[in-house]
Image 1 (tube, rainbow, N blue to C red):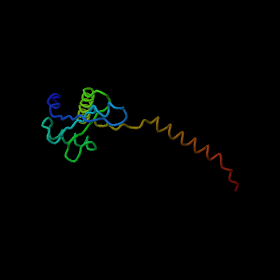
Image 2: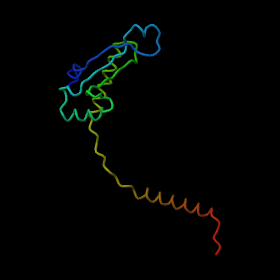
Image 3: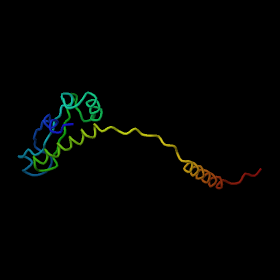
Image 4: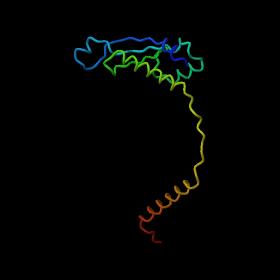
Length: 134
């Protein structure tokens, strides 16, 4: 994956941040919104696009565009760096292949312990009952 080529496909937009902050919030566009069109990207193979689409299915809009934003910092430059890093982390996580799980046997000692505990519990409860007189 070529990070610089991927960054060249990103579109940024600076907007005013919401929330409290006094006069500064009303006049400075410090929040940064990142747009990435996954469908139109030529940095990924079809298989990678499918995997990313599945991984990002809740984050993509109907047009296949990923929208991320950052308003953590009061600096627009810092927010741009943060949102870019967030994007790269998402892409790396989405392309990571999960290891196949190897099923393991339950050890005999664990089975024995479970059955012993079960038997002791049953005896304890049986001792609570009044004796049967025939």
